[in-house]
Length: 312
Ligand code: FES
Image (cartoon, rainbow, N blue to C red):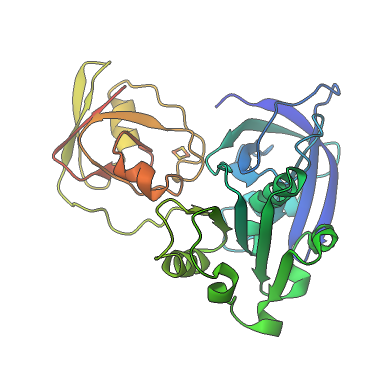
């Protein structure tokens, strides 16, 4: 993965268990532009790679900000950031990439659960900047665990803060109201919240709901049998047995696939599908993108059919 080296300018606690990192170019150079919903890959000094949503000011071309939740059950990336990373340290940064773009609408309903506030914060600012209608429903375990409440206080009247220990589960039905064709619903948070919002949006127009997941939900694959993958450009066909990922199989066959997370969350390994139907298992594609069957993430996704043809 190609990455630039940035320096940690500041590391600030923004809630219980959440620190914000401000990253700058060591030479003071400007950083690549980004749009609301973008994330970067953080390549930590111990070579772990993690994805974090950009949650700073997109009009500040010299700084990136990300917020990192300490995840006790995680793979060590968040613990490294919390316990070892210091201002002045250098980190590799890949991206930015945006798999959660803010599509045009007259009005937005944002729903955040916990650290899921991070990609939505720049969307809130964008909607405010261009004078569109928006409301944010923000839930979390407790008020102390919810990041950026002070920044959001500037939008009084548009932001509903609902800590679970004070108000219970989010009242999605009253926040969403009746389906409206001029409104997009953006949700980021833990899997149970995403499922609840999906259920609550069942009567909304197609594509009204956009979600971003923290992790792919890797249930059992759709088929247990081996399948074939044809690498059209390489001119080879490989068999992918159960227990071997498509990524491993195509790499063994000599295909070069760029990867980062290898968990179906970052979008780096996006591969064009020329024929066959993938068994999508990633956390990146929206339902309508899955249905198009024209791309897949071979680090986690597999095949529904006996044969897949990839543009590799
Ligand atoms: Fe991140 Fe495949 S490497 S989605």
